[in-house]
Length: 364
Image (tube, rainbow, N blue to C red; front, side, top):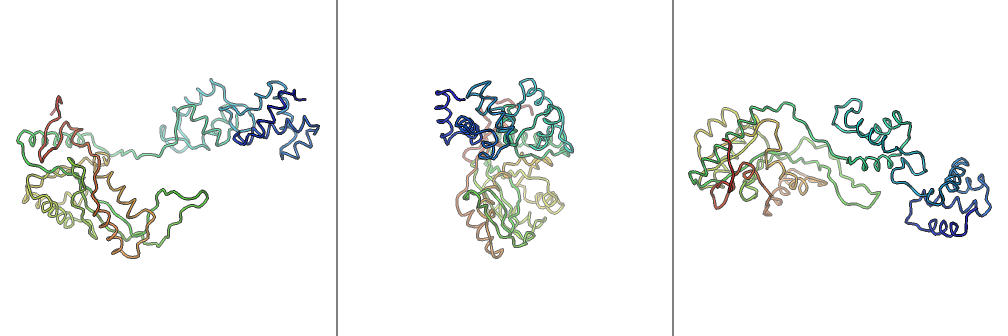
C-alpha cells in the first residue's frame, strides 16, 4: 500500500517520540496495514475502532502522509472537522457580544461553555485541548477575574484628586519638609493560607487545617511614597478608633520632623469622631482619604502580598505569638517597593521635599 519513500518516512515519524502520540498512532496504523494486517486486526492492536482505521487510510490515499499530521486548528487529535476561517471569525464575534448563561457580557467564558456554543452553532465537537488552541488563535487568554466596584462615586474620585493636587501643590510651593505616606490595614490569619508553590508533578502541597481562621493579627502599616520603604508596621489584636489613634501616634514618633501627609481609606475606624478630634489636635499629621471602593488607588494595598507570602502562605504557626514573631521577622529585613503615586499627580519626593515634575501642567 505504501510507496517505498512513504514507508520509510512513515516509519521515521512513528519512531520520533517527540511527535504527538495521536499522530504517531496514525503512522502506526499505516505501517500495520502495509504489513498485511486487516482493519479489524489493526483496530485491535491500536485499541481504536475499524471506522477510525478506515478513515486514516482514506486520508493517506487522498492527501498522502501530510494527511496524517495534526493540524494546529483541529478540535481534537483525531482529524475531526475543524472550524473554517469564517466560522472562527463568527465564533469570536459571538463570544464578545454574547454572555455565558448566568453571567454578564465581558465576564468571561469557561471551556465547557465554549464547547457547547461551538457544538450548538457549528456542529463541531472540540476537546479541551483543542479549545485552548482555538482561543489562542482568537487572541484570547485565560485570565483571573477582577472585581468591578459598582458603588464607586465619581464625585468622590474628583474630591480625592482635587485634595491631592492641592496638597502637593502647596507643599511644593512652600518647600515644606514632608513625609508622604500611604497607609492601610490587613489581617494575617493563624491558619495558614494557600498560595502557589513548586512541587513534584502529581504531589500537590498539603497545608494543615487547624480550623483557626478567626484568629488573626491585625496589621497597620504605611509605605513611603518617595522611597518605597515600609514605615511604622503596627500589630494589634483589633481594629477600631483607639487602635487607629495608637498607630497615628506611632507614625508621629517614627517621623519626628516636618509635615506628614497620609493617604488612607475611609474605613469607619479611620473616620470616626474620636479620630477626627485627635487629628484636629495633631495637625502635623494630615489625612487625605481615598475614594470608597478604589483599592487600586492605594499603593500600600500591593505591599501586603510579600508579607503574606512569607508569613502566612503554607505556614503553620502553633500560637499567635509564633505568628507575631514571623511578622516581626519579615519587617526586620529592609523592604522597598516601587511606588509611582506622586508621579501620577505630577510630583516627586526628594530629600524630604515635594517637587513638581518638569514640564507638567496641572488642571487644579
